[in-house]
Image 1: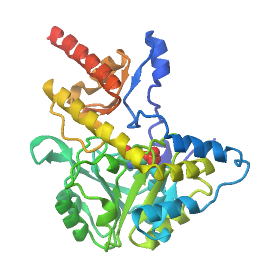
Image 2 (image 1 turned 45 degrees about the vertical axis):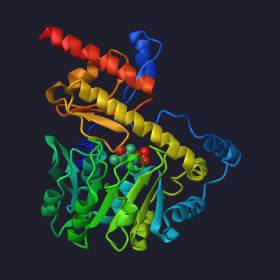
Image 3 (image 1 turned 60 degrees about the horizontal axis):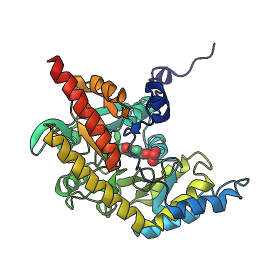
Amino acid sequence: MVSPRAAVSALPAYRPGRNPADLAREIGVPRAVKLASNEVAFPPLPAVVQAISQVAGETNRYPDNGAGVLTGALATRYGVAPEQVATGCGAVTLLQQITQAYVEPGAGLAYAWRSFEMYPLLAQVAGARAVQVPLVPGAGGGPADTHDLDGLLAALDDDTRVVLVCNPNNPTGTAVRRAQLEAFLDAVPPSTLVVLDEAYREFVTDPDVPDGTELMRGRPHVAVLRTFSKAWGLAGLRVGYLLAEDPAVAEAVRKTHVPFSVSMVAQAAAVAALASEDEVRARVDEVTAERARLTAALRDRGQPVADSQANFVWLPLGERTAEVAAALESRAVITRPFAGEGLRVTVGTPEEDDAFLAAFDEVAAVAAARG
Ligand SMILES: *Cc1c(COP(=O)(O)O)cnc(C)c1O
């Protein structure tokens, strides 16, 4: 019998999220609402649909392996050289490439926890030492939902090759501010690569939350990870990118890519999306306005929801999390529970969020009636 590597056997099996159409059928309602994966609710941009149909007739050919046009467009957009850019099949693939390029078996990969679920899996597959630093309460107190940059810094040692800072943090939505992050970057040893995972950067409204593409300037051990999956609305196409101050970092990441992994369709769509940035901004403004409404509505209900700088909100429900998520699901609302910790709810359309709030009220009423 063949057996996979021990690290792979130990990985949890992938559990797909509930599909809204299946759920609706199962519970006998016309439709279910999915607020579980932080996508935007808008359909693809018109220019994206047009670009996709234009390249559809060329897909018998391999894509440009270097994603030249997209790389050039990103370089122009961010004022960097093309050599500072690496594109990937979603930012998650770039995280894998970063780990392959920089983290030897046994070396350290550091990150805050709770954060993006993929980080521990990266360490496990790489045979790396996961250095997890617990979140702490934010400036206003309350639940532990914010990066502890001092703790993260103290946890680094000579053998920590990469530190991942998810800002804003998934799943808590909190963000670290400029002064703290700058001090952190300046204190991290130059031999440790800091990757600022800014998957939700476009939703940031607080001007004191720094833009990693500015912070990386003059700091060759800093790189920024972004994605077209969230604000840009291309989750189904799989495109992300890395911008590095040091071209050697981008090169190392490019060297570990799976050939042709950014498809021709994805490249064309991403270029078209970049050219439609004004429309994307208008959509993001709608999302952040709705985020404020959803946050206020939950606070009115007594929930200690932190200020989110992303397109989701975090309900620190603790031990009640799994039960509440299941009760919401039975009312046709799919959210993302982190058992024992909290519930992440993506900001949807006003109608979707009203459906969520109505279901949440019902669940609370049932719990109250039970005493
Ligand atoms: C969604 C997400 C990503 C990347 O998504 P891709 O779809 O692979 O580009 C990366 N980091 C965080 C924190 C995310 O939430």
